Amino acid sequence: MTEDRTLRTSRTLPFSPEEIYGAFSSADLLASWWGPEGFSNTFEIFDFTAGGRWKFVMHGPDGKDYLNESFFEELVPDSKVVIHHDCPPNFKLTVELAPVGEGTHLTWEQVLKMIGVRSCLLSL
Image 1: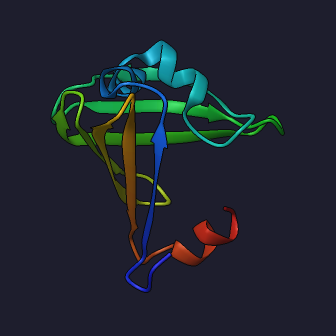
Image 2 (image 1 turned 90 degrees about the vertical axis):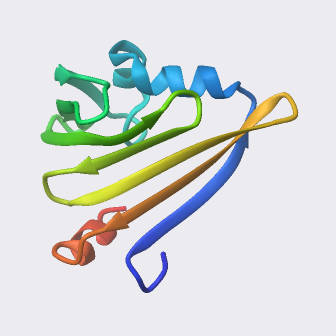
């Protein structure tokens, strides 16, 4: 985490950019992996288009439900996903995919808004 409220991480995954982008663009696939380990998701709105929205409930392993709403600022097939999370904790997420060897180098950059950053970080 940098002082400018930005969390950056990257890694190389053994999947093609098309497969990773597909894991974002499919409600069924996304519902099974999005969020912390042990969580699942139920999507009410899944409009994977530039300007489109996600509205879903994230179900925690403790039985609690968390409403989430986001919109897509930019979608570049097999290359980039930019999401604005419009409910606390508010953030902008940019995921970039670059082919490398037989996999993909994924870069994740999450910029948190100032309000609620401390409480959000404490829950990570």
